[in-house]
Length: 164
Image 1 (cartoon, rainbow, N blue to C red):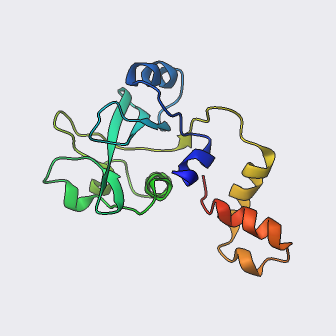
Image 2 (image 1 turned 135 degrees about the vertical axis):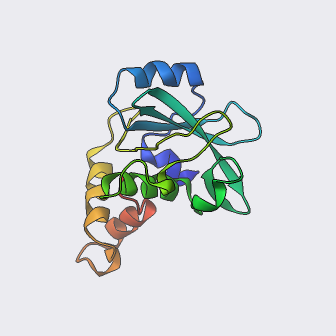
């Protein structure tokens, strides 16, 4: 959760109605993470799709995070040790040459199939310049310890080792 809170796109106790209102003003692929209103889940991904805002529950099972989905689709969806890793994975898939109709991008809920396209996080507030620089450096290299930087700066970069 500490990584998630550092993202700037974790909105906390936002309702699905509030998330829908906020995302209606954005472009397709814009997303945020919020607390789930369902007590069986910790978090929900809210994303603007081509048909409007959609909400996908994120489940925590056996120490890993993944999207809730019907049983037949679950084996096709990956699970991650960190929520930010989960979201980063699907952002990178959305940016790759694969289409939005790829099975790895389509969680299936009880009611519908969602073609998941994640392109841009919706920040609750403008991120600091330090945080934005950290993201750019982390996109550029995985070898943070080898950079000619002071130890404290390397520690800061490693506190949030993600690309978004």
